[in-house]
Image (tube, rainbow, N blue to C red; front, side):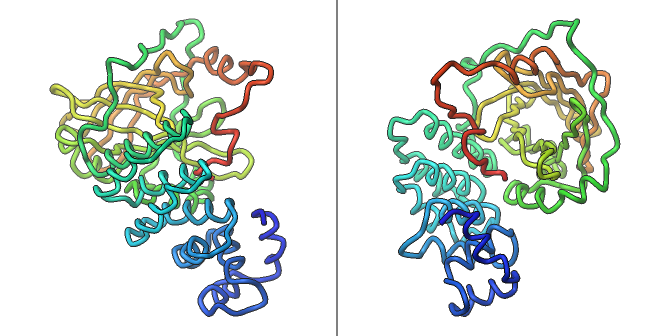
Amino acid sequence: MSMHDVEDATRSLTSNALANIVRLNRGPVDRRLAATALLGRNQLHPVESARVILTSNEVTTDEKRAALKALGRSTDRGTEALVIESLSDPNPFVVRDAAWSLARIGTRDTMRRLQQVDPRGSETLKEDVEAAQRLLAFRLGEPGFGFDKRRLPRKAAMPSDTIKKMKVSVVDPELLDKGRKAIALEAAGLDLIDDRATQVICLKQPLWFLPGKMAAMEPETLMQRPGVAMAIFAHNGCTGVPFLKSYVLTEPGRGSVDVFVTRLRGQPTHVGKAKVSRTGLSFEIGALSTRFDPPAEIAGQLTRDGTVKLETARVSTDFAAVAKRRFKPRPSGAPDVSDAAEPRSDQ
């Protein structure tokens, strides 16, 4: 049964009624169906509902994926063993979602299990699992899982005639409040400060930079251990709410901090440096020569009070590169293995 079928079958039931079915195991619909419907509404008892689904004898792939995503967003460390079991699932998308969840709720013991996952010849699954390992390592402050800087492509050469300055504006409180629930779900496990967002207008669409608590409280710690310094959220024009777009990871370097902006699947899009200053952490980031999302160049400070201050004159985007990325035709008959081919883990 698809998630749409579940929604149709439970439309007449309130969330409280569904929660009672999950808790008491009796009612007008099956307990697993009620649990799946609750997860679809992102309301009430997500951990309990996910447990019901993952321990059921008969469960669809869609239900299992929804349960794994819910556990990753719950940051409940007690469900780690249950999620690890799904790493052996025959469906690669289930394995991908299990790895994503473990990146949020996993401990140091989880790292060894992720390293043992068999990608089954799939480069996409291999990338997804490696991205989960890296995010987990940075979240836990574990060294040794950073990027091999010698293998990264060079920074993109920005043609001066196409670089346009971006608009750094005051955060639209109404728009941000509308999407605060979505941000809270995606920020779970990453320790982000959602009320310190900095808004940037890019191609008439807002981006939000949310700082991490560790970096906001002690910028000096980023000189000593890896960490998740920020996350970038974008506005979804269809749903009207923000979604997690990129991670900003920091890794100690020689006298400074290496900064990497990566997509959710781990591909680095920007690289730069940061240094501890009197007021916080000053940084400069530039896009790599691979396909990237705007902005192309970013500079500013992550202040000690947990605010991102961007230098307006040094934040830019390359419209030509964006157009090339957006409208590049796919070869005839080539399969679509991008994030767009499968429902994203952030939606």
